[in-house]
Image (cartoon, rainbow, N blue to C red):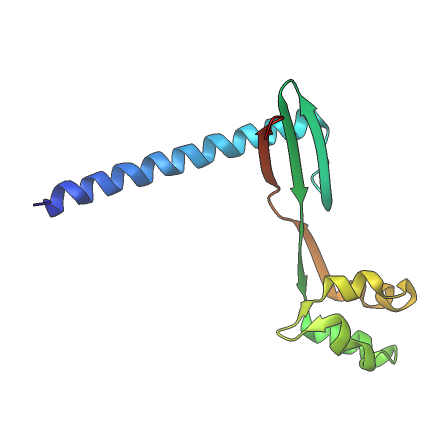
Length: 129
């Protein structure tokens, strides 16, 4: 029969090991980004090869919308009809529609959006895979 105290201690050790492993992996990823010359503001995919490895780095941007400012900008620029296509309301940006829309519309709404990079994801496999 399992002992609750032993399992609790094992879980705590595992969580500490997991946290340390994540920190170590992220530091390694940061060094890889630096060596590969990949910018922090990467949005899209960058590929590289090293020996028997293929490295794929996917960068994404987090976009936060100021709903009040967005409504004000849309109203003052006569763009209310575009809001439901460009944004999902809570509001969050509909990136596909945003990228497909003429910049004469999207540029007028940019002040309502804060863009920051999210952590890039990594995939490293051997070339045979």
